[in-house]
Length: 191
Image (cartoon, rainbow, N blue to C red):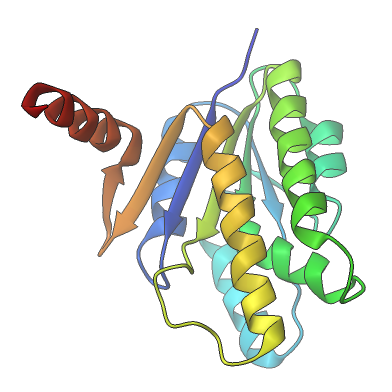
């Protein structure tokens, strides 16, 4: 049995986390919440605490700031939903621990592809949350540009392997696959 992969993208405060958590809760499946955040300061600790407080008590939380593919492979089981919150922080964590010259993008793309394959092979459902950072200004410093580029490539790889892709806009989920099919259909009709 193959699991389903869903990617939920959006900007800051777009409603992506709430939407993903609602989908997980409505699935009726046991949920493993894969948390990638680390509490580097008081403000981040408060954000993590707020996320914990709103999760149902029945959900199991696994801390995975790095090595996401291995974590998914370890916890993926038939009929289980793994909610990864979020790819954005995972990419940041991985980027900060690696050499500046390393081919981080290729390594992270490979890791997300392995995570999707592991979930599917186990029959687990995978719900990924990530920030869409490519619509803003070009970061003025090299690390910011490396982060934006790496996350963009990871998001592309996740979307390519996902069954469903949603872009959150002001709290409204936009079904990217359905919209893409509609645009393609209209383009072929007018050609």
